[in-house]
Image 1: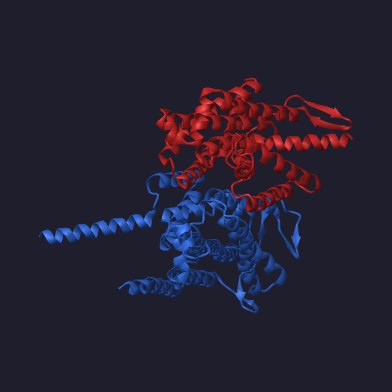
Image 2: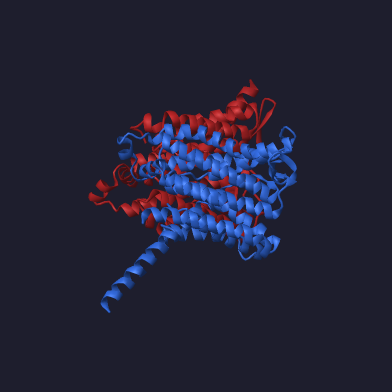
Length: 335
Length: 288
């Protein structure tokens, strides 16, 4: 029974993903696809923090640093090389190296939770300042552009063939495929020995260490895997908007990622995807209707969830469903 | 020689600014072991509470030294009552809730006041050192910071409330058992931290201007100072400010202010590898 569930979840996700990727492009308008692509990219980013914070218990407040680094590494590589194959790899590897370096100092120093959160956020804010003021810098033939960012990024192309570029439909399908693959892979990663140790460290670090596992190493690897996923999301984001700018490092963006994961529920994967999509939909709707400054709404959502729904939506729903079925079960016995 | 004097003044000024923007955060952290993510917005509101009354015709010094700290201090007490108190003992949730508050305040201020607000020019003019002009206000910032740091020291060391607060920091359960109203101590200390943040924002407003997102430019430095300083309010703030102020200002002289900021962060990460509890986790443990 238990094994069944572990397979049904990912299989269902893969099936839904395949169906959507096949059917949607021929059913809906292109601009809807483009919107959906953004939600998918943000969901991938949310999954990266769901792994690092939700399962690993690593309080990373600056996940946007890896997202932005991935995006910038990809764009700079692409402008210099003209073919997207190596830049996509760069967009994943550069954040991983950066995370490995930063993580080494933080985890091997055994820095506490609060410090970890504050330092990771500071890293992303200082990257923002650095890129924002770097108007005059050029890396190869790519101008960083400072505050203006780098516009006009060419689309991802078929590996090795720069002329066969992805259309909007192709980008949608690629992003959706990435989301499904990452979701399924995380499922299996968390069910593996490695994943169980990671979750054990979150529950009780000392006890896990006494059982012979090096918590520092496990945290570091989790952190680096999270950075790789965030970097890939950054690549897809730059591809989605043909643009990358310093706002990906801003405190508002970092806060959003935290809000997605928190609203969805810590320690869930599907919740993170749902949280990212819902919050993204709300802020886009508010932004396009100019009802209120999105920061007001985000701030209120943030405070309300911390105070009233600290476990997030998905665990709440699960509780509710459980109590409903328990109630139905007991009423069945009575009659 | 003149140049050397100017460099020294700039380094001391950098140290003073760091200590000034961090002391309010450090008091709240030292007391409740919580990083107040809305700290930057307390500073920002302090700036507005100076500039707006000044444009309404009130004396600049009165707005800066009285209106700003009192308003923001009271605001801090309200925040403690409405949000922080409900999450007492849950450190991560408290940080997240204050982060939400920070977004909310930024959103409200940019909605109500807008992105443009005329600032206030630094008063006092400038003095000449050799062939270099140095703003007299620089000296005022250094002086004000020294007075604040000494004042906080005297408060915690010699006043009854300060001693009770210090005892509560060290062992809140014991303090409660001895009849101290811990909640009241927390509220007052949070208010004090907020008031000092407001005052810092007010003092710096003529130098850096005011806008809804000005807080973000302050918080990175304040976070790093408090985290690297460790749990002691004065010792931590002072030692980390001296260390990082010197490093970042010297790098700034050699390159640009942004690279100076990067150097500050790199130094902090290296330092935390060696001293994960911050400077005062290892040294000056018995101080304040």
